[in-house]
Image (cartoon, rainbow, N blue to C red; front, side, top):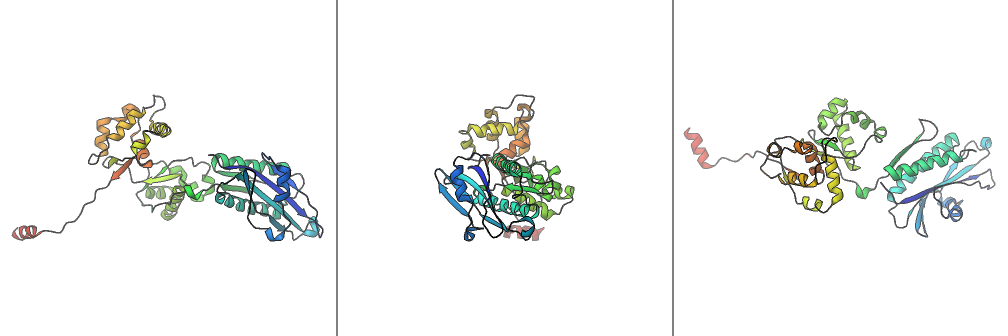
Length: 349
């Protein structure tokens, strides 16, 4: 998962007593213009403290929030206030909204660490801060989130990259809906207490009601947790996949014919046993083509026998629903008003 930022720059300025004494620590990654940047990221202007500052220069842009931390024990530590700034540097023209939230949360973390532990202003912490910034940088770039221990296991920085342009508005979750996990949740389990209890039972087969019962969680909390996973594109929900269901293929299958990457993704997803050769895309395409309205899932699988081609039947349907290749045809009984002839027949009998 590649982000559009390039590096972090952290600068710290300390104001001692009534005089202005500047002590600047620069923790950088891949700094290309460090001498120039060092002069603009830390400002003593109180009007700009706490304000989001976006600067464009050369082929990149910077996002920073100069922050002032007052010290109540100025007599003891010899310092009246500390001014620091954490700057995110991105490519020119990149959307800054997701980074602004990361920056504001990171500023709040370091403010608390400085007030309680003098973490930023203490001597000898330069290498430790560099390691933290490096972990945040690579965690967000590689995985979209990070969880970094700062001082001990109780002082942890947790950040995540969320671009709302790519988020999905979650639907209303029904008791019978089955959540399908489409991303690795192992690193996300520590972020949410509900997800931590729910995670062992997520197998892409159990409905929401059963998940709530097995995890001993309130049904409302389970539904909100599933909605959060859908919002962050970590899961989606489908109605229970039963052999009595009817599915039909959509026109979306035509687009996958030109997308070899999506074809490989489909092959990896529906493959049943790693010990045997993977099914070809032609085999999977022919299986999807047999889904027609009026034909139940049981009839399709009894006739085609996808397991003989090393294709997982359930995952074949799951992938089709996820990519819009398949849709379920719902049938509902409709109560019709009796006609005059029916009334005559009923009275006569």
